[in-house]
Every structure is written in C-alpha cells, then in structure tokens.
Length: 552
Figure 1 (cartoon, rainbow, N blue to C red):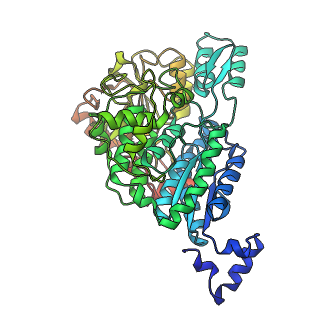
Figure 2 (tube, helix red, strand yellow; figure 1 turned 180 degrees about the horizontal axis):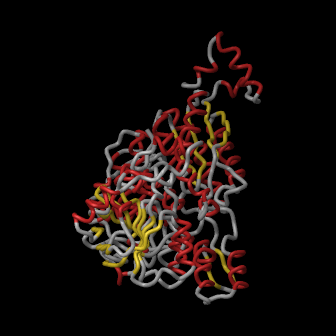
Figure 3 (tube, rainbow, N blue to C red; figure 1 turned 120 degrees about the vertical axis):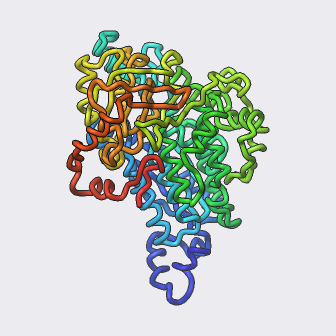
C-alpha cells in the first residue's frame, strides 16, 4: 500500500507514534488509509450539512475495511461572494482547493480519497487534484437544497432573490414581498435548486463515472444522500484493493460523454472552463472544438431553473442523471460505453433507469433543436466565447445592438439600476477576465437585474468575465482573448454596433479595420487592479479561459 511509506519498517517508528496519537489502533494501522477531503463550512449553504455525510462516509470506510481520516479544504459560496470584490476569489479558489487536496494526500501518502464536495469551484478543484494524484478516488456531491415556497409560490434562490430585486426595481413587487421571498427561497442545506454550476458539475461528475448513480440529484437533506455517502465509503476500499484510479475513469470518452450531457441538460457555462481544466490535469486531449462539435449534434432534452420552472427536485423525480443517460445512450452514437467507480457500464446504468419523458425528453422529441450551450467565434472572440442557449429567448437568437461599455461589474450595475440601459443596448463589461479581474468574476447580479426589469430578450450583455449557472438572457461570456491580454473587447467604444448570431455561432464588432487599427495604435493597457496577495499571484500565472483558465 502507498501508506506503507509512513507506517511500515523500523525507521517509521516516529511516524507510527504520531499516527497512534490521532487514535489509530494497531489493527487500523494495517488497513488502507483513506482520506475524506471535506469542504464543510458554516458559511456555505451547500456545505453546512456535510458533518452528517462525513460520518456516513467514515462508517462506510470502516465497514469496508479501511481507516478513515477527515481533512478540510476551503469553500466559497458564489452567491454570497457575488456582486463585490469577494467574487474575484471564487475561480482562483478552484486551484487553491486542488493544491490543498494534493498537498494533504501526497504528504501523508494516503491510499485513497473520498472527495466530499458540492458547490461551484470545489467539485472541479477536487477533480483536478484527483487526476494529479491519480490514486483511487470517489466523489460524493452533497446534493441540492429543497425548493423554496412563499404564499404557495415555488421559489429558487435566483427567482426569490436576484430576479426579485429587478422586479422590485420595476415596481412589480413591494419591498415587503421581497423580504418574504428572500426568507423562504433557500429553506435547507444544499446547493441552490436549479441547474446552476454546482448541480451541473455534480451531474457531469456522475456522467463521467466519478460518483455513484443517483448522487448528483439526491437531496442534501435526504436519507438517500446519507446512504450514498455510506456506500461510497465502502466502495473506496474496493477501489483501493483493485487499484482503480481516476485516470481509469476520467478519459477522453467519459469527458465527451459529460460534454454531450451538458448540451442535453442546458447546464452552466462555467462547466466549459472546468472540464477543460480537468482534462488538462489528466493530460487528456480536449478543447473548445469538442464543445463546438457536440453542440451541433446534441439537442437539449431537459430544461430546468433558471431557464424554466422545474428544479433539481423535479429532475430527480423524473429519473435524474441515469434517466438522461438512458435517453442519450438509446438515441446518440456520440455516447461511449464507459465504466465508472460503481463498476457499472454506462449502458447498464441506462438500461436500469426509469424516465419521465414529460421532464426528460428524447432526442427525437427534444425541448429545442438547439443545444444547451454553444461556442461563438468572430473578431470579438477569435479564441472563442460561450453562451447558454437554454437561457435565451427563441425570439432573440440573433441580435444587433449598440455598445455601452463598462470596465467593471459595479459600473455596469449602476447603469442598469438607474435605467441607463434600454432596449437595443449591448452591455459590454471588460477587464473582468482571469487576468484582468483578476479572477474572472461571475455576472449574476447584472444579468438577473436585466431579466427582472423585463429586458431579458431586449438587451444583450457580453464580457470577458463569467456568468453564473443561474444566469439567463442573451449573455455571452468567456470572450477570449480578454481585454487584459489585448483582446478586441478592450477596444470597444460606446455606440459601436455588435452582432450576435447564435445559429451561425458568430459574435462580431461591426467596426472597420482602419478604425480598429487607429484604436490599437492609441491603446494603453491600464494598471493591474491587484498588486499584492493571492490575486496578484494568480493574475501572473493564470492562462486564457479558452483553455480552462488553468494556472501554470
């Protein structure tokens, strides 16, 4: 066993003495050492229920014949970090988490890992670490929260808070009603109820085979989630005994399965960043071209909040990830028969699945012929940009408007709040990319305010920053190259005409080459926004969003 490096031989007497100090028995010393990387936090609703799951995983490990050790990793709640400087730390935390897991597991020579995770950057960060370490690993995502309800109105975090602010601004609801909704829209522990980044990544982790069937959609507060946690603890010992590693599970085929599922689900645009980064950590050949290719082959068969009323609860009841895989396996040649940590082939999981086709459609009868996500190119995004088509109204798949340019999210928010943004505008937010932000902030606040004001199909928003999985509307993000790397988005001026054509996958700045050349000659890059600390370091080592905003 790998852990023999710290527990066997005369020269390891000091190591054993320290392990005995933690409470390990002589019998426990003989067992595989399994780490439980837990992102428990009192600050993050998706993680506050993890103490119970830690115990269940621990029981499972000991039942399976292993010795469990719990250690912590940081977690950021994007919803709480949103709309201020705190969001700059969200994407960088992905790499920080990967470093933390790698450090503890390698320093203590653990034989295997159970990764207890849930929210936006924590799950991909842990998967990056899993592939770096390449020791037997299983993922337990803590699950979605229950749906909110106020005065018999079903609510999610987005509808009950961010979009409600726009409705208040538009005089559609009172301030008293806003407070009622905010108090009731998040009624339990768990990841926010829609197909935002946390739940999308949980689904894709299950598709890739790194978690047990049913894990992604089982509610955080359910007995089933506890059972899955226990079973995962038992299973990791088996994976260690059989030496089944993440590189055996996460392959080009399983990652392309995840991309296809992402298109079918209409998930968060953030998953493109994360899947590319995960592939990079495992030396797996994957690029934006794979997303672009599959976007033309996989139609959307599920539509959940924030793009529609059904939530993760409804998805779970309709068959969950296994149900979606059944539809994809039965009807798409793009899906490959990979094997996950459960030991089951994808075809076996699909065969056993039950599906409610009123929620999970077939590919022959999709919700829309469009995929959930798409990659756009053009002079504004020569390296690519991404859009969540599932959140775009069908009547504005093509859009042309006049630019209103802002060099920060805060400046754009002020303009939206004061009604400076009107129908026909293209809000352009620059210097919010990985380097320029730094940290590539999510733009949920401005996009939700636009929707709440009734401008969701009348105003476009483009940025070199990111969007939340909760974003809907005509929003193009991850524009590459970003402004801080000399991208054309940094040369856009007020009044410039911008064209977005989703069917043709194009985004263009309609300004003559001669004018653009003049702007380039007169352009001076602004000073970096951060000059010290983690963010300044991150800005120096982070790469383009087109390759996953990886750090080198």
